[in-house]
Length: 181
Image 1 (cartoon, one colour):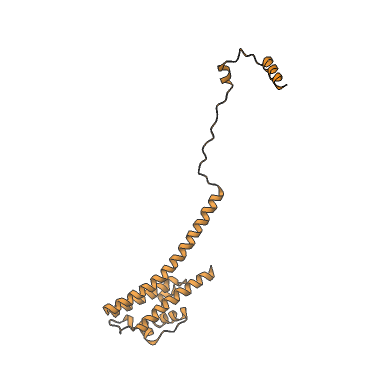
Image 2: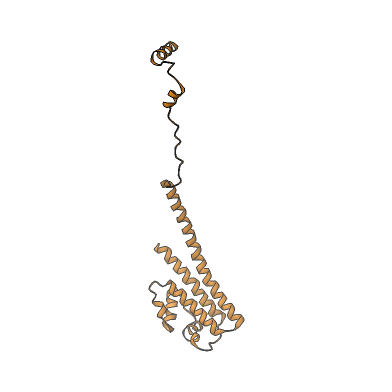
């Protein structure tokens, strides 16, 4: 039945003599190749992935930088004391150590008012900021001895107190930063 219908349609509708290759090619449409898929603009999912990766990288770098700064301060304090042990230059030790304490305090102090303190006020601020009490030798070193031409010899215990202040101050600042965040 299908064959009979196909034959009857072809005989009645199409004249076979008129079909030529030119007539057939006029009715053909070229194949259209779609444009290649570009990589830009990216889908929103890729933007979210990039944002998450950037946040993770930033967070991990922030933690490493904070740890390296506090470790660098302890390392610098140790280097200063080691130089004192080898050189015996107490004046250089006093100058470098008080500079390190002041730099640390000014960087950590939000109000920046600590930079103008001197003498007993400076020592009081150091003690209050961490909650430690310096020995008489350490207080004298920070108040008076560092400003003399030939300061008295710095004992290991005094250096230990100053290095301990650096460690505790950085730890306190880190804890304050975590609680405020």
